[in-house]
Image (cartoon, rainbow, N blue to C red; front, side):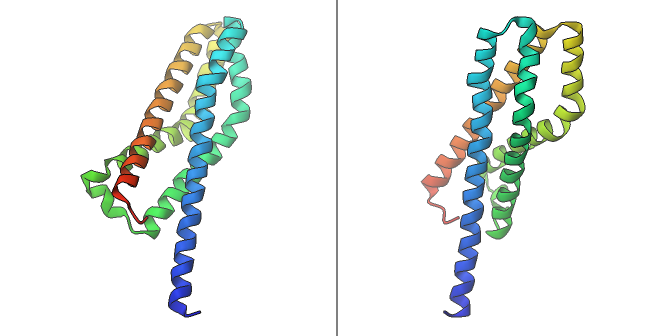
Length: 171
C-alpha cells in the first residue's frame, strides 16, 4: 500500500472516529438531560412531597453529574478535533454555518454550568434553600432552567444536522 493511500485512510479513520465519538457524546449528553427534564423531574413532582423533591433530585443528579461532565467534555474535545483536523475554522466566518456558532455557544453554557456554576455556586445555593425549607422556589428554578437548556440544545442540534445533511458536506 502506498504511503499516500495509507495517509488518506488514516486521515479518514481518525475523522470518522472523532465524528462517531462526537455523535455518541451528544446522544448521551442530551439524552441524559432530556431524561432528567422529561422523566425524572415530573416523576419527582408526582411522587415526592414538595419539601422532599429538591433533596431527592440532588441525590439522583449527583450520580448523573459525573456522566454529564464526561459526555460534555467528550463532545467538546471531539468537536474541536474535527474542526482542527478538517480545517473548518472558515465556517465560523460564513453565515451559512450559523448553527456552528449556536452549538459552540450552547456547549459553552453547559460546560460552564457543569464545571463552574454547579460545583462552585449551585450546590451551595441549593443547600441554603434546603436549610431554609424554601424548596418550592428552588424546584421551580431547577425545572425552568433544565427545560430551557434542553429545548435550545435540541433545536440547535436539529438545525445543525438538517443544514449539514442538506449541504451534503464531506466532513
